[in-house]
Amino acid sequence: MFGDLRVLTPVEVLHYTGHAERRHDGAYRLVNTRQAHHFDTVFGRALPLRAAS
Figure (cartoon, rainbow, N blue to C red):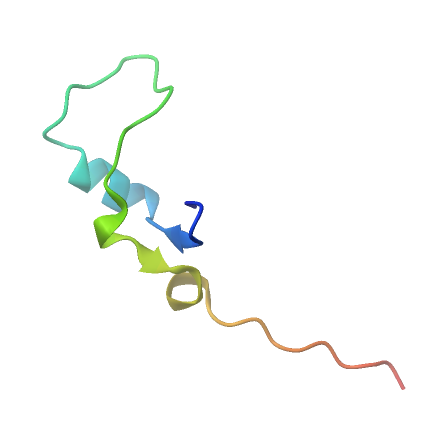
C-alpha cells in the first residue's frame, strides 16, 4: 500500500519490476505507482457497522 491508499498486488509488483536488477535479500523493490489500483477496487468497499440491538 502506498501513501495515497493505492495498492499493487504482489504479482503485479513482480511483473512491473521484472526488468529491474534483482536483489537477493528481498528487502525492497522500487515500483512506479502509476499502475496502482484504488484500495476499494482491490479489496472492496467497507460495509457500515450497525449498532447491536
